[in-house]
Image (cartoon, rainbow, N blue to C red; front, side):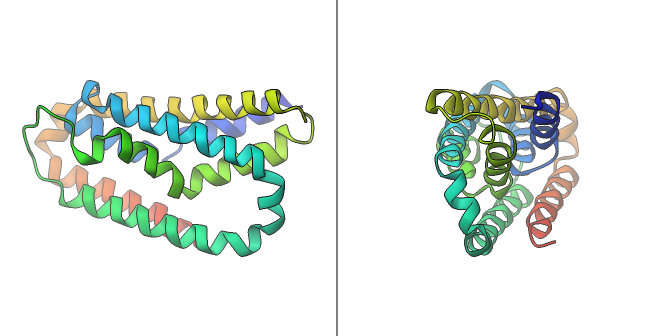
Length: 192
């Protein structure tokens, strides 16, 4: 297995803008890093489940991807547009609790409609892992590794959001508009 190509692909994909990273940055910028921890737990849990599913069904899905891809894209785009709308309409608030957008469940559910990570898992498994490894334990270890790498990208974006929390609060409307537009771009790019 070409580990340098595998890690280049996985880190570049995990650290580029996408729904997970943008929502992580937005949540940490709005609520602080500490209050965003449940969201990251949800992201990681959902990531593990989705990566395991990609590992288990990669061959089958890859065979049928032409018929599955349009439905995945429309569902993913609709959810990403919903996220853009929630970011855009977000109002400043003082909250001592966890917001709906920053909950464990929200982070976990995002993974099941996030076409970027589904394609990330399918591509990594079918291109890098499955041609070289066939035992279940090794394949599941790679699924876990993909989840760890993906979640690490979210954490980096969240740290950025938390560090600039005061700036985010001062320019909330403009930053929310930019983040919403980036999410809209993510949705549109699914069709390009």
